[in-house]
Amino acid sequence: MIFFNPLKTYFYHLFVLVRKDFLLEIRSKDVILPVFIFSLLVVVIFNFALESTPNTVNLIVPGILWVSIMFGAMVGFNRMLLAETEGGAFHGLLASPVGRDVIFFGKVLSNVMFLIVIELILVPILIVLFNVTLSPLNMLWISLPALFGISLCGMLFATISMNMRAKEVMLPILFLPVVVPIILGAVESTHSIMNGGNLDQNLRWIALMIVFDVIYGVLGPASFTMIVED
Amino acid sequence: MDALLEVENVTKSYGRNRVLHKLCLSVEPGEVVVIRGINGSGKTTLLSIIASLVSSDYGMVKILGQDLRSNPHRVRSDLAFVAHQPFLYSQLTVKENLEFFGRLNSVDNLDSTILEKAALIGLSNRLGSKIATLSHGYIKRVAIARALLHSPKILLFDEPESGLDQDSLRLFEKIIGDQLESGKSIVMTTHASQISYRGRVRNQRISKGMLVDDIF
Image (cartoon, rainbow over all chains, first blue to last red; front, side, top):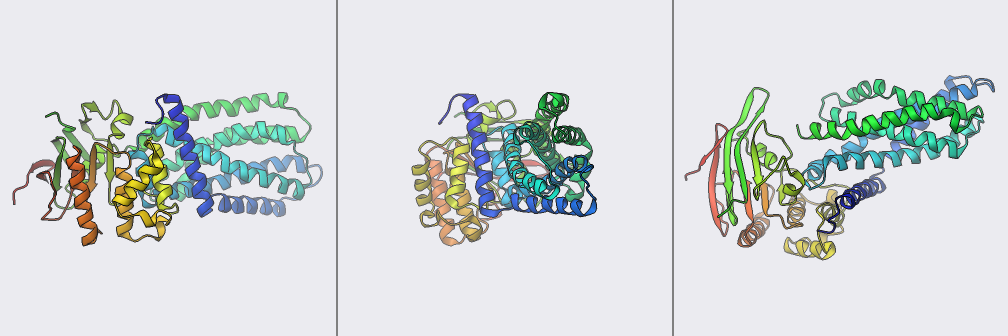
């Protein structure tokens, strides 16, 4: 055995799982590319559909940003699980001496990192298309709890719908109503920051997202364990 | 001799269809239990329950006296399962797959262990190949190498002969013999009527959800 410290082993397994997801992504480009293209299309369609003026641009851009990320993320959840179910690799994970919670958090962490990459590309595109300003540091404080919330909730519902016949339909039906607090918090705080607000003024929205993350950080792995063993 | 694996009164139903009914099995070190049965008799379900991929409705599985439910991590580190599906990532190479599962199983000296198992199973010149580019027989060999990587005490094989040519089958029989000689236990399901392994072979059949002696 390499490690005897349970905490060290936990984080080592987490690292191994995330590293594997990145290796798979480099090989297959199954997640980041389709998610980015989908999110970009949502941004472009909104750009044409909504007539933005200097007065309304700050109202609509936060919504466009987070709706495009959320819709893109939904594409990503299914793609990530597809790589696991192909060839039964997921069962190989479940049969290994790794906790189900580690497997769940590994998937969530990989997904957060993929979404950070998408956001890093999308935000400059929005800035150019809509001529707005966004503070990168303040956006980081909003994005981290928002992306964790989206990923925690999304991976859980993607796992629930994984073996369903109509999984493509079930995931949005389960995921979208539940993730509303995250979208609300992310949109409101992004809107505030674009209007010159600082982080202190958005603490209640950030707190709302963190509470959501904590709830799904507990519910997620517990439910995941029950789902995969049934 | 103390049993390596004990299955006590395991019951499993899918909806109204009861597949396993109070099934009991005890496997000693160096013993291979060969389980036969018609399609749908519950052979794969039994192996999946032992491998903790499926939970039983009732009953207990113990490995080296440890209950699967109370200490799943410890128990799973003593097990390996080679199923119909290879449990491998098709976009990764043979070596990357073995490295990944080796790390999850905390295998010491991983690089040399991979080289050793690859040589044992005739994969040395395929380590850099993507799983997606390999034939069914070679994928099965990789699956077996993955299972042997952490030197588990109990090996579970679900119809291992399927998709293997004569050379691969002989190699497989040799590997099984070596494992049995080193005190490992094996539980396998098969449709083959004749098998020849070095070691103690016990033939069983699943009938009405229970194990009975299989007499030829």
